[in-house]
Image 1 (tube, helix red, strand yellow):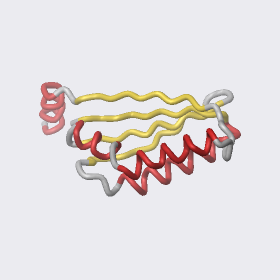
Image 2 (image 1 turned 90 degrees about the vertical axis):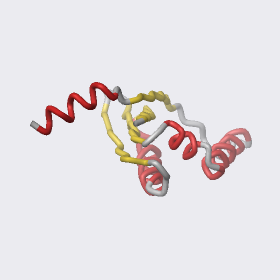
Image 3 (image 1 turned 180 degrees about the horizontal axis):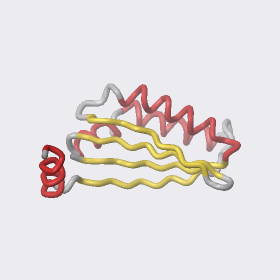
Length: 116
């Protein structure tokens, strides 16, 4: 199993952008091959808000295939072009990516204990 966590932190006054992104991601990711689960976590800080998109996949290749699809790449190209043309306002956002693989030995131990 492969887990991807993408965290985005933004000023509270622009939280609507992250909320819209979360709704769009949830809708689109449901079509992904190899997706096991998807969650969006929210954390409020003093002046900012953080959203963490956590997806679990059968394999890292399934995630790579999802993120490499033409639709996703074109979306990023369009956003970059709009920024360069100053068609949209650039808003400061911190992005952090973390990926994990499950430890099979530990997962087996936990599953065995849960069964008891």
